[in-house]
Length: 284
Image 1 (tube, rainbow, N blue to C red):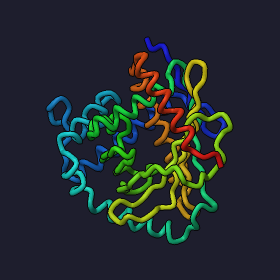
Image 2 (image 1 turned 135 degrees about the vertical axis):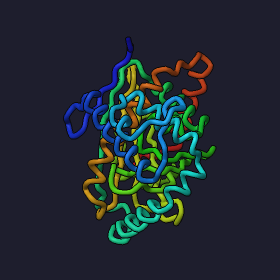
Image 3 (image 1 turned 180 degrees about the vertical axis):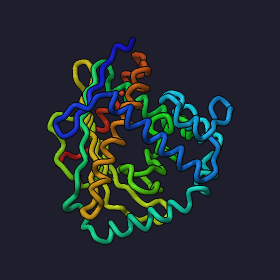
Image 4 (image 1 turned 30 degrees about the horizontal axis):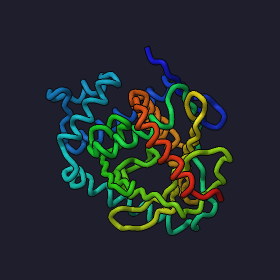
């Protein structure tokens, strides 16, 4: 029995974990269909799973099957197989970029999260684990539409994901930036603001999309305000879809974070890191 609690709220409404799991399983089935069209066989514990059986998998089995398949396929093969989708998504984003001003009239997608007995320290350890593993298995467990993941020591991430559950997977560079113009004013008591720009990886073009997550320690957990700010001409479906993406992703990430148990030394180091990052981030 878990001794922690996670609450999600969107537009003032609490979203249950069962609803998040329902959407998550739907997206697994979507990705299974994508793989099937490409002739990619899905395996579970080394056994090939027939198409009709895939739709009957539980969420837990679906997670393992897709993660196992992706890890076996590897990063280079993933880039090769999804080159046509990347080209199409580049064209979609290029049209959005062309018709949108920079840092103006942005469309906000916000998800609020509150945890009890999952600390900011534990969440930071989860992020470190994700970067340390730097594989396809763990990101796939976190969200079925994480097709590709690669992290570097600067905190940058290269991903392929169906952004906002809309159309084709996008090949993106997520680049943290301390000097970024925040799309909204950070909360007054926030400990960390994780903000960055998003680029089309293969074109090195700024999508004008900004990610901004605010994390605040509480007595027995933390409060998080997850934010994605899309350019003016991006379809509204992307904004709404990405709220669900964030909920699925963060829910799985927090369950993994809850299993991280920092020792006294790690807590000291993590606290120092938070203080250092607080000094670097601006407030305007």
